[in-house]
Length: 553
View 1 (cartoon, rainbow, N blue to C red):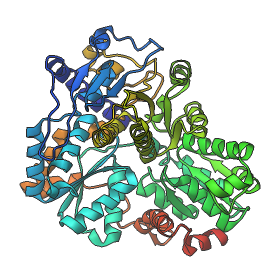
View 2 (cartoon, rainbow, N blue to C red; view 1 turned 180 degrees about the vertical axis):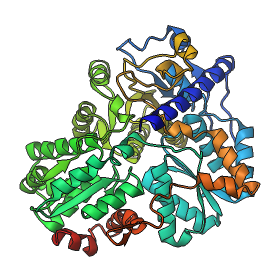
View 3 (cartoon, helix red, strand yellow; view 1 turned 60 degrees about the vertical axis):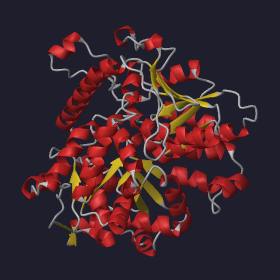
View 4 (cartoon, one colour; view 1 turned 180 degrees about the horizontal axis):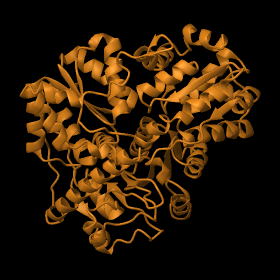
């Protein structure tokens, strides 16, 4: 894990250095609002004078976070070097967009990318997707589960012959597995780089201690292991061999647990891992429900087969793995929370389920007043879109109003958020503004001359990476291993028939041909995903999974 993090962090730093070079050009020009071939309004970039000199920006100032303001005319105003770095590529070069579009069609490829891609790549991909009807289904930006569905759809509707998966390795594994089960296993899935693209969270479940934890906790009880989708197929296979296992996402983890408890009964023991923050936050959520909600509200707003007593029992029988976290969401700790409470009380707060408890609790408190949301990347995007839309259509006087949103997740989400907000403002003709605030930790470090002498290995807000010496990054260093250059390289390899080279870009195949307890390791790895997909379709756990749980495996 250590070596992959160092490699990923270095990749993030190199990306940040490129951003700083480009920012010198961007500061010298003013981009006018213009319309592309689909009459989509693009944004005008403006750097706030108070923040224009990155050498003057002191991340130790605790009364302000960097932010992007989306104006009523579609303009973008950036405040602070970290926000500058995010804003630079929201309006991509039309020539780059045209080139990528044409080469994708020439190679008959599709692209699926995670929301956490860097803004340069996301900006180009979003523009490519909107550039023509032919590209609409060939490019998709989504969360880790939806990426697989998008890949299947582009195989079926557009007949793509290869898919580039832009994310980390377990995402490429999952996309390939979902495509295979949908009858498209012959279509290759390529990663952007031949190097391993790790994930601090996924790797925390690949140690022996994770299986040992499952083995210990399941003893003598009806147990169900709910494993976060952000894990490798190998981890899922080993887990499924040890205990009945179902995959979950941050969007469906709550309902998965509630439904499992309702179907199996109060004796069900739920093991959740590997994301410690998410597990602890779910425990906090359940306790909040028990303490504050009535039985009637629980049945109406949470789950029809639950009440305070059953939720309390579920909370009691839930066990969380305590040694796993995401390097990105680890960022949002006490320092960030103190600043949010002190200076952003008027803001809406969004918090991913993976953030530390302090940030989660603020999001929970705000959500009870409909001024915040806790959940997945999709939940965050939908909440911001909903609030902007509600304000836009209710503002009869058409007065200029600014809504502030604390973005409690990876900063790469901002590309999708900006596009959604701009679309709402354009369609409604409203004067509403939306300010997206990046809660970068106050202890984040800037790029220094000393760091440059060391090869630039100290990431920092001044360079656009937003990493902290205390741990955590506002942008994912692993995701930065995907960039525009690597995507173009993959397309070139496919076009030029470099089949031997492309083999190294396929997802990891650590399970190929292996058996676990006499069962195909690949089948075991995919089984938890299929159990989840069955639940999402039928809104009930499958009898095959329930039988495993009831029989104690």
